[in-house]
Image 1 (tube, rainbow, N blue to C red):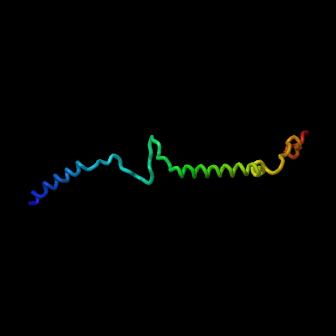
Image 2 (image 1 turned 180 degrees about the vertical axis):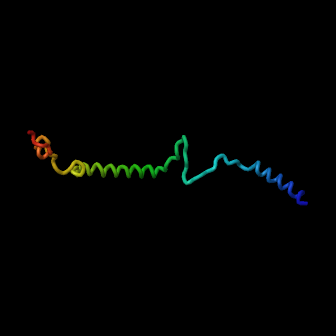
Image 3 (image 1 turned 120 degrees about the horizontal axis):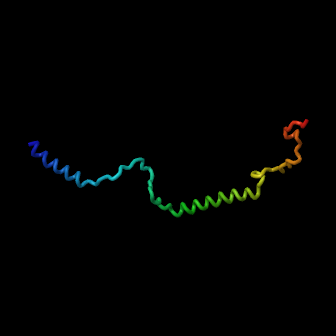
Length: 96
């Protein structure tokens, strides 16, 4: 009796396995979209505009402070003329 019930069950499982979709590649670490030799998905327009605005503010900040406070980059004091330095200041021993 078990044999008569087992044969149709085996045939059914074989048919189900044949019709099951085949997995071409297993997905590992699928926390993001992975693109290989193709372009990624386009970002939303709002993100593009927001990124442009943030970049504009950042460049304005840098250029404005270079214009109004150049001492932070170039120094606040005049650079001394090295031709006026003495040998003693430079650490050169006296010529004998």
